[in-house]
Image 1 (cartoon, one colour):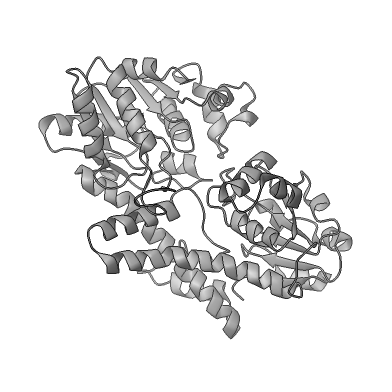
Image 2 (cartoon, rainbow, N blue to C red; image 1 turned 180 degrees about the vertical axis):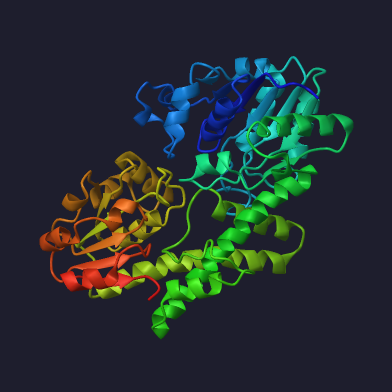
Length: 464
């Protein structure tokens, strides 16, 4: 089996950075270099102030501090790191296409192809190339075709090693993984490559948790895993709407069905909607693949999971507008939270973006407090929608660094992210400085509704 002494990871984002940090921490004999063409991002990974890391994950900064400069490096010298590496991870962004064939569903593989061509150009010795990005089935074959036809006599083994990380718990998910999936060819060299990658994870995980498959099964398993999880969220969100009409409590319903061992309690937390970089993107990718093979009924089934998620966000917006006497024009609405979930600064597909956009369309003034997300990021998120000019977004969206100041003279507070600190805020103080009647819309089901009602709030808790 080939001994891996040097690893290069292309892409210093939410997957590449934490994954390589854990590998470097657990494999001190391996040199790990994370490369990216984004100069500002690499500078932040190298910043002596660990608060400046571009990715916020509990436990990440501590591990970076232990390994950085020893066997963990962050660099913009992409070709140099590739040339030196025995194993190369591709961990670049694969957003949903916004143009052309497959628009709105298929994955945009532009950065994957650029990575493959850079690997081919820089490689002078045999390499193991590992897909770490979430990719459509058969992408490995496309990467192999590029490498085999553009490199000069170098042999490449292509593996699929999908990530199963939940943001906010990524370090724990890496250190205590339920399973690691490694897909590759069943040729002698393919098996050797799979075993070489398995040996890295075996530094800290039992071998029985490391599953080896063919590359196609590995690629599809990632999409299907996220689709199944998102399906559970959309299912309980659909029931939350029914609960509100029937005076049932969605948490009580979720608890009751979660006790069924065939169902289980995980991913049955109703909310204003799921977000993140993977769920929607992977489901839409699955929909596109099914359609491309003529499986229209399969595509329609999975597409409904996304449609239900969009419906939940619209339902939340409509409830705010109707409760505020059918007009929010000129009214101040405070958002607690912008990240798509707690313990991360990732905002991709966050429900807050779409709820804010819809309320701004009604001329509401949105004031936001989030402990980890910057104003620049929030405005970038809104501007990407292309709904209005950047100047208009900046006029209607205000960001504050204090949750109490954010709620001063507000007509309503909307809880958009389940940050723990929002459970323990002084709501009597918040109530005293808001306009009356003062409304709270809990889109994450984290507050004590009865306690807020006693203070004087008009409280809406999604799902009851």
